[in-house]
Amino acid sequence: MKRYMTNGSHKGGTCTMSFYKDHYQVVIMGGGLAGMACALRLQKWGIKDILILEKHNLPGGLATDFVRDEFEIEATLHEMMSIGDENDKLKVGAFFDEMGVKIDWLKVPECYRVVVPGEDIDMTVHDGYERAARDFDAAVPGCYDKVLDFIKMMRRVYDSMNYLSTHEVSKVKMLKDHTDFVRTLGYSASEVMAACGIDGRLKELMTPYWIYVGNPLDDLPFTIYAFLMADYLTGSYVCRGYSHEMSMKMQQKVEENGAQFEFRQEVEKILVKDGKVTGVRTARGDEISADYVVSAAYPNKVYTQMIEPASEVPPEAIQMINARRLSVCPVSIILVLEGTPEENGITNYSTFSGDTLDTNVIWQNGLSLDEPFNYITTICLNYANPKCVPEGYTQLSITALHLVEPWLTVTEDEYFDRKRRLANEMIEKCLEVTKVDFRDRIVELEVETPVTVAHYVGAWKGSIYGYSHSMDDHAVARKQMPGAEDFIEGLAFAGAHAISGDGMGPAITNGQAAAKAIHDDLARKGEAK
Image 1 (tube, rainbow, N blue to C red):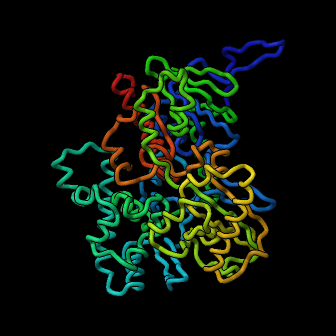
Image 2 (cartoon, rainbow, N blue to C red):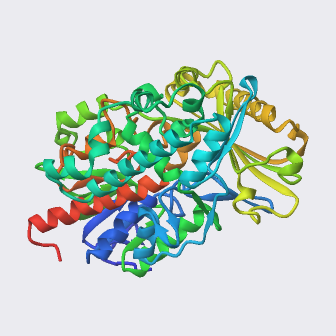
Image 3 (cartoon, rainbow, N blue to C red):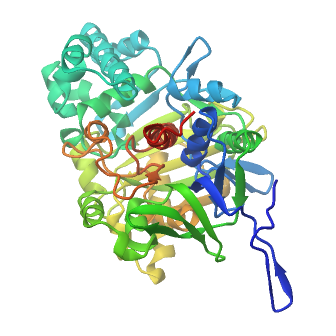
């Protein structure tokens, strides 16, 4: 790795080395998936003068794993969307191929199992549109044709969203070629499902994935729901080397392409003059000049704590962050158990379970930490990656996704008791499905909360999913107003908080969007290659 001696100085007889050049074309704050995707896309377009500053000693942010005794344990990834198989790559899988980043993908064996013990609901949905429709028909006889038509319509909306994210389209062409997208735009998932005859028990069975975007169906734009379902129903993937493999291979390629990647270097301030970025200042005091800065930090933090001088923060930026609502955050119980999954009563990779499938009831439950969570998602990595633990062990995660606000009133004295109570309650909820009490077989247990996330990656209030996709503020609406949130020239955002929203796949899409904004600006100035 290169080291630069410019601006070196002697202080008290000790030589202080600078890691940095005097100036970079692009400085990327944060070596997570979005920041690295931004760098890779810029490099593909010939923009090579890039510095990535990461505050930790590893790349990837939450795309990571950890080691306890002899176990290497996935920290966060449930399933990676937008990958596709070898013969039909979807956009994130195609991105990795184009960039020459070779990930050892393992296909998840099914979409999900959904279980509500008190309502006699227990079914498994497999990938493939026709097969999924047959699964729903087996649970609700006679629905095959309308479900398959509905899934195919969601796929057309999905294809339109992908196309429109990279192409300018006239109104005439929009109406002609993207009819389903236009027809459903502006309606909630509940409204479109009702219009298509998807209601009652069938609606409940088709909506467990909603929790990954975090809004109840009455306030979730259908376009977001359709994108989620059409993608996940093609099949999902995980990395053989855990999400850490993805992070490490992206970092390796970024450096091979000529970027400077520095760890344990946190950015404290973004320097601005006359409405334009001029560089950054690190926690150790280095001032680094740059034409563009790409921020992994949430706009909430950037505009309230990081812009220097603070007088350069436009009032519109404060209005924007005050209007945005954070999406859901996690409580996750990460476990290693003695015994095989079958011996522990675990039969599927991904299971959604709880007391109800009513998204409004689940949403209300997530507004407080006083009652046990009534809806959890459980992932058993063994079923996608049999070698994730030594033979005879099970790697399991139990997650509840809820709003961050209840954590804001938890005091330091209350925190550990609250965390233990939630962990016990969530394990008990899982045992209602497994019918096997595996508590005396637990050999490793870690509890992740929004506080964990905030401490580890600095995500605003511990939110992992960016801003909420609601009927009045969602990805599609944001994409219709490019540049509307460019409050400071040369400043771009890349992360879950950017346009496309939450998840590791969208983070990679968001990183590329930040790269495109920089490339387009250079093109306007006549500097792009």
